[in-house]
Length: 304
Image (cartoon, rainbow, N blue to C red; front, side):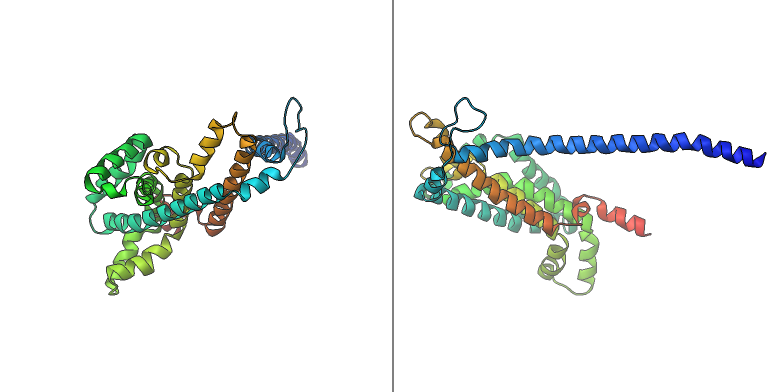
C-alpha cells in the first residue's frame, strides 16, 4: 500500500514538473522576444543612418542606389565641423568638471554639516526641470547684460549656462552615491581620527562616491553636448554640433549632401557618447546598486 501511494505521488508530481518546464520555456522565449524588439528599436534607426552616410542617392528602393566615401571625407576634413566638434567637446567637458566641483562640496556639506541648506540645493536642482532652457537662457542674458555685459555671447557665459542646466544630473547621482555609501558615518569616523574637512572630502568622500561622480559626469557631458536652445541664444558667434546640425536641416534644399553629412556627424556623436557610456559601465561594474539611496543601509541590515 505504501509503495502504491508513493508511485501515485510521483505520477501526480510529474505533470506539475512538466508544466513548470513549459512555463519556463515560454517565459524564456518572451524574454528573448522582448530583448530582440528592444534591440531592433535601437539598432534599426542607427543602421539606416549608417547606410545613409554612405549613400549617393536613396530614392524609391529599399537600399540606396549607390555608395560612396565622399561624405565621410568631406565631413571629417571640413574645418567648420572640426571647430564645432572641438567647441562642443570643450563645452561639455568643462560643464562636467564645473558641476562636479560645485556639487561634491555642496552635497557633502548638506549631509554632514548643515542639513538646512539641503532644501535650497534641491530647489536649485529642480529649477532646470521646471523652466524651459529658453527661459533660463534669456534670464542669463538679462542678468549678464546688467552685471557683466562683456561676457554676453562668449564661451564663458555659455559654459555657465550649461553648468546650470546640467547641475541636477550631477547632483542626484552624487547625492544618491553619498546616501548609499553612508557618508555621514564615514565622515564622523574620519573626523574622530583627526582628519580635516579637506582631507575627508579628498581621501574619504570622493573614493566612496566614484561611481556617482562618473555617472553624473557622463549625464552632464551628454546634456551639454546635445543642448541646442541655450547655445542658440547665448552662444552668438560660437559653433557647436547641434547648431551646425540645425543649419544643415534648414539648408537641405540649397546644399547638396547636407543630410548625408548630417548622418556622418550623428554617427560620430553617437560613437563619442557610446564610448563614454561603455567606460562608465566598465567603471561601475558591480556597483550599480550603490547608486540607489538607502542601498548602504540595506547592505548593513543584511550583514547584521
